[in-house]
Structures are given as structure tokens and as C-alpha cells.
Image 1: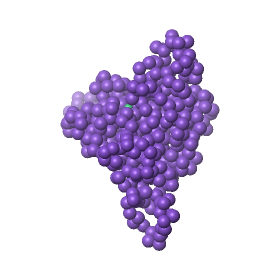
Image 2: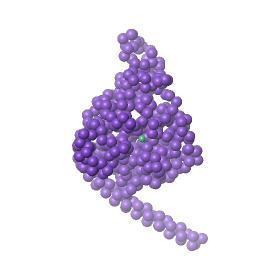
Image 3: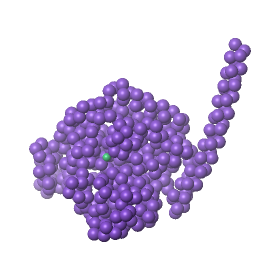
Length: 455
Ligand SMILES: [Zn+2]
């Protein structure tokens, strides 16, 4: 029996039949938020190659755990369609999409000349059904954004998404189509400001790059940074350009960060960012490679600590899209995303995994939702270093003394054109504000000099 305990309604009595269908969790909050779960199981069937660390199979494991705990009874469950080509083209270049659409392992020779141009090989191989896989994962994120916009969901989850490295013209870091950018573009049709938070161990470079020149999206990425670790970007000095200046925030972390330091840093940064930027919606990328023991990761986080960050954002009450991302030790990826599904629902799960799930052997020997994952990498983040990181980010935030004032307009179908025009308009406004500020500071300096002379 996996049920924790039922602390509520004494009038509810269960017989053998209802017992069989009872949810395996305890309700924590009376006021439940509407949570939707967007997953097309076909996405878990693709295969990047035997030695490749990205295993879409981890999505199937996650799904088995979520179902095993019977959380589907509390979730709005959707099996999303594939993103259409038109939707993919909202962000990606047509030349790149044509390539993705046409190349297969069987005709790859014909396209060999284009591999270098499109960054194919190594991290991003050509595999069977590659474009279909990309469209499934992107379709789920677009679907999630739609449910949020329509108000059908308060929190929309897509564990197959979060593919934050994909660029406009090329794939990168196992990501071919950037579902996050497509979902955010859709949110921008109705939301004035979107905050993107990324807790994958790698820098969220593709999302940052897409919105680097706009203040309608703020990107905030927590990641390992030493100038070499993939993708080798994400230092403090990447802050955005033009209208987007001060709207890209990067939190460079060293190897081995532990639960307590990570949570403290996360809260100390996310809270002031929310206050300064005042987003109307939040997109949270929950890459599982920031867990301890990840095949490619270098942090020491346990599942509960990672989930604490998700819970912190959830409790702030913004409409929220929750996405997957990296994660290369499938048994822990699935534990994490199952746990974070329960966090979104506000329910407690029995730490002992349900015994009736397929692939139980993956969870040997402890069969626990919370194995100890910490302590495998030396923590190179001194308190002093983390305090410096926090101070640098808060310093950057001082430039955002108020949230940008975006007048709501009806989005034309050409969203990229709209963004360009919008950026131009905002750029002009900001330029005028800068000039006013500059004149005011000159006047102040002049007055100060005059004061010095008379003293
Ligand atoms: Zn990653």
C-alpha cells in the first residue's frame, strides 16, 4: 500500500473497489491550481543512437511514475499534436527547417556538404524521425502555452520540452527545434512580459539569443560556467543588447554546488527579479542534469532541492509553464520530473515508489523517489563566491528600476515582424529616456561643480 494518509474528509469512506482507484498522494492545499500535463508518448520512442547520452526513453519512465502514483487523476492530461511547419518557422530559418524536414539516415550522403553549416554530427546526429521528434516536443510546449493563454490551465507541464540550446539556423546540444522560444513567442501575443528561468546545469543560450534584443522577455539562467563547459557562454557580462540590455541575466556557478547554497542563491535572485521585472507569466526550464550524479552534470543537487526551486516559483502564483530539458541519468530524470509534477499539483508522494510500474529494475536497489545524489563532486562554490554572484546580479537589476511599459496591442499574424516593430518603438522610447537621464545627470554634475567652486 503506497497511500501516505488521508488527513481530510472523514465522511469519505472507501471500499475495496474505490481503494483500487484511489490516488496515491495526500492533498496539501485546499486551493488547487489547474495543472495540465502535455505529453505525446510517441516522443519517447525516438533514438539518438546507442552511445548518445540523450535518451527520449526517460520520458516514458517519467510517464510510468506519474501514472504509477495515479497523479493523472488530478491532472488535465493532453496528448498534443505535432507543431506545424508554419509554427516551427515562427522562429527557425526556412533553409534550416527544409534541411531538417528532408534529411534522413538513409539519404544523409546527399546532404553531407551541409552538415558543417547545420552543425550536424557529434552532439546533433541525424537520426530516424528527427524532425518528427522535434515537432512533437515543440507541439507540446505550444499546446501548453495555449492552455495558459486561454486560462484553462494555471500550470502547464511538458517534460518532453525545454530544449534550450536550439538556434534559429542550427541545432545545438541535442536540441533541434527550440520549443521554449516557440512557446514564448506565442505567450507574447497576449502577455506583455515573460520571465524565463532556467535551472538546467547548462546555460540556456538558445533562448537567451532569441530574445537578446527585447525587453518583453527576461531570461535568467543558473548554470555551471567556466568558459569551457558546454555551451561555454553565460557569464555575467552577457546582459542583452539594444532594447534587451539588462534583460538577460546569467548566474555562473562552479562545480559541486549543494542543496542549501543553490536554494539560497535561487531565492535571493528570483525574488528581486520578479519584483523588478513584474512578468505576467513565467516559463521554467527544469533541466535534470543539475542533479547530483548526472552523466553530464557537475552539481550536487538532490531531487527535493531541485523541486524546492519549482515550488518557490509555483507559490508566487504566476501562470506557469514547466518544461524539462537536459538530464542524462534516466532513472533520476524520471524521479525528478515525477516529483516536480507532484510539486505543481501541491500533493505529497510516498517516497517509496509504486511497485506496479514497468521498468521497476531501473530504480534498484532502493526503489525510492529520493535517493541520495549529493556528495559526488567537490563543492567549489565558497560562500564568498556565491555572495559575489548574488551581488553582481542585484547590481544588474538596479538598471530595471521599473517594469517596461508595454502597451497591449493586437498581435498581427507576422509575430517576428511585430517584435521588430515593437522593439524599434521601444528603442526610440528608451533612447529618449536615456537622453533625458543623461541631461539630468549632466545638470546635477554641473550643479555639484558649481557647489564645489563656491564652497
Ligand atoms: Zn543541460
